[in-house]
Length: 313
Ligand SMILES: Nc1ncnc2c1ncn2[C@@H]1O[C@H](COP(=O)(O)OP(=O)(O)OP(=O)(O)O)[C@@H](O)[C@H]1O
Image (cartoon, rainbow, N blue to C red; front, top):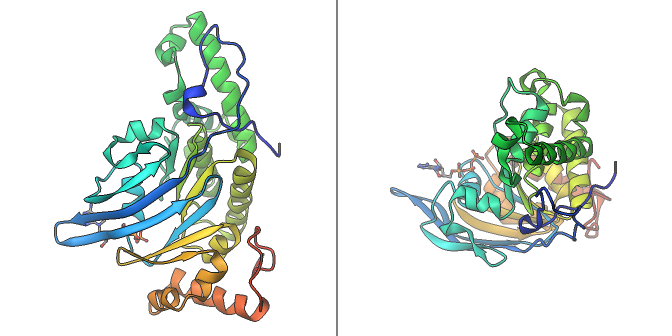
């Protein structure tokens, strides 16, 4: 399946008993505008007046060395941390004053660095948990086998299967999530986030700990998600090749401050970004290496497509 029905905005999720089959409108994906975001812990400023905008339907990467403030930013965006100052607007909503469940209800879904699936439950059951926010009659009604609940449950199961096929985990629907290879579990997490019918996905290191084949599979899946669903993605990732291939726009944090913002090719050449990463390992050197290869292979600015003309694509 190359395309999946675009997700409707949450308010348009019609799951009632008598509701006609919904005509699914194009998703209304607003901008996410982070402005002057500051978070202080005791004496430490984890985020210092950070600002960036995630354009509707784009894939925006948030990168930076360890301790730069990326997770703190995600925690504010998902309502886990309170901002000391600044704002995060998602369309008309100000997210900094909302509890996590209210933010999720606006269509903001998040995955975590560490796997957060229930290992003993099947993949299907984990994905159904992702649908919980969207149930109208409630799982109790379904559990009691009431007709409305049964019909609603059937609709959710059908949607779960559709999303599982889209993400390529449908063959594992009956398998306990804990028994799946690591890379597949990470894709199941992505599928579970999609089960919330999000308008923006916050992905925290989706390929961390994966081998090369698993990384490529996840990158391909993310491309399909972006192309097929029209939602926005904000990605925290240390794998710079992946960021260079996938991102439309990159924001770089260092010691809680935004030090650069722009398309990947420009970010890779940005002296301040390279300086921020120098002396650290892993991602840092990957930025410098990727920048060097980009310079060697592409004298002019490469196009902002999915990796055309980019190293390693
Ligand atoms: N709950 C907290 N209490 C106190 N300090 C915190 C808390 N959460 C984060 N910090 C500090 O804020 C700074 C930014 O941390 P954060 O986890 O956001 O960085 P990061 O960019 O996500 O790093 P990494 O790439 O290692 O995950 C760090 O100095 C960290 O120790």
